[in-house]
Amino acid sequence: MKASELIEQNNQKRELLTEDNEKYYSGMLLYIRTKLSLSEQQSEEVLMEMLDHLIEGQQDGKTAREIFGDDPRGYADEIINHLPKEERKSTSKFLSRIGVNLLGWFLVIRSVATLLVGQESVSRVYIVPSLLIFLLIALLIAIGVKVIFGLIHKTAFDQNSSDKKMMLQAGLYGAGSFLFIFIASYFIKDFGPSFVLPWTVSLGIGAILLLTSWLMKKAGN
Image (cartoon, rainbow, N blue to C red; front, side, top):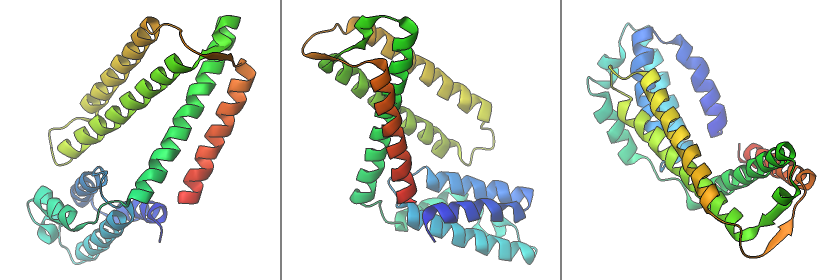
């Protein structure tokens, strides 16, 4: 089965676990899935094997700790050490899809902003400043994903961790990033070559890019 099918089946089968076993297994699942360098396909196959093994053991009256041990982090690290890395081709496709999706939203949001402001000057695109802002947004999103996944990976087995605290940290990062982009946009002056891009054209191109990103995701699945 493909990774997407394994994930869906995993979600369904986890409902068969007891509360304690589900909590133990979910910790290992998050810990492994948030290791972005690993092969997604191989990771999901191993996670499914672990889940099937746990369900069988549970039917015999065993707990997750009895099956996998009292050190879930160490067990998960051992599994991670034996999993292959994601292929460069798959990584390139994923990054390309994210880039297309990001550019699509960038153009759609720009169209809405242009329409609301109602100034023709906003329809003129200065290539270099726009490229700098786009790269800044992409960089902050990439850092944000790494930070959030890092938090999840770090607290996967922490009994005292709080989802609200994690959401607050993610929210603060998002707000800080938005403020940083806003300030950068204010100080980056318009210069260099430019062209006129009406909001209708920008909206149309953005919609096409978002559709392309969706089709790329479907093809990958």
